[in-house]
Structures are given as structure tokens and as C-alpha cells.
Length: 256
Image (tube, rainbow, N blue to C red; front, side, top):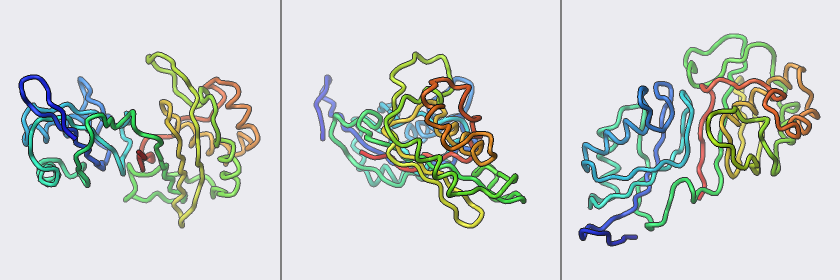
């Protein structure tokens, strides 16, 4: 669990599992001119252990996206026990962020590279009348009653190892391998709440939100279920549906 480093200090590697309400944050990663979850987390950590920290997150998340489970790797020589660190962080963090697990890990553990798959959910409030208690936490879709069977037929085409260029927003990052292996995709209804769940070995930029926007186009009859394999095959963003708003998206589970 530990490794000696220069200067005689003994490093440890701590895994922290947190949840956060992303409404007021510009994603996880520290930004120069905007508040991020990482910034408030490291500020709270600084109050407990000072600057003795090297913090890594399991994933980037977009502005306004939430996390039911987000994993962090902390390398530090501070000796505070894991359970005390968890309690101390929960005293210092704002109410929008909480730590619900903390444990020591082997030194080679990395929260991003050791992750085998992730699960996202996207919440849609499907009612003519908006729900004020879901503002910022679900997309309000008022236009028609979403046909879950139809959407699940469309979802079946997402499953498999595909090049998902059509489901990725282009940005300034260097293009890499655009293949992702989607192992689960399903739409479920609970009353007026419709939830899209998707699980894969990784996700491209805005991939789940574009998947969701494409499903809504299917619901509107603007895209056919059987069009989805061709959209994937085009490897061109313009053929998929719009990018759904960030408010309904949650990083739900991270698997190691």
C-alpha cells in the first residue's frame, strides 16, 4: 500500500468516492475562470492536510452534469486515517459535494486508467407540466408521451463495439481511437420519469447527451430506429440528433 520516496517521506494512495450536484460547477476539472468540483474538493483537502496532495479524477464531466459516484485518487504522505479524512472532508465541503467512501489503495491504483467501465444515466421528466423540484436535475420533455418500447428498439443499435465519431462533439483535443464498447443501453419509465441508462468501457465528449438527443429524434419520428446503424457508420456528427442539455446527465457508477 505504501512506497518510500526521496526525502524519507512515505507516500500513500487513497481512493475517495464522492457524489456531487453539478448545477453550479463547470465540471470536475479545475478551470482558470470558472468554479469546478475539483477546486472546491482541493480547497477542502488543503484545510485538512495542507499542500501535500496529488489529486487525480476518474473522468471529466461537463458543466452542469451531476455524479452519483465519482472516484478520486489522492497521493499524499499525510498519515490521517481514511475514515477520519472522510469525516473531515464532509465537514469542510459545501453541501453540493459529499464523500461517502475513503480507503487506502496500492500505489499503482489510478482512478481513470484502472476503470473498466462507466455507467451514465439521463433523466427525462415526460409530462406536459414541468416539475419545479427537478429544475436542473432532469430534462423537461413536454411534447409527447415517450414510447419506451420504441426507444429500447433504438437503444439496441447502440450496443456493441463501434466507432462513435457521429456521437461526439468535435473540440480542440487531438482525435484518438473513437471506438467504444457499449455493453448496456436501456430506457425505463417510472411514472413520468423516463431514464436512459448506458454502460460502456468509455465515453467520448458529449456522447451520452448526443445518444439521448438521437433517441428524442426517434420519439419525434424524425429519425427511424433502423437509421441508427447507418448514423454510426457515417462517422459524422451532423447525422446524429442534437446534444441534450447537461441537466439530466449523471455519472452513475464507476467499475474497477
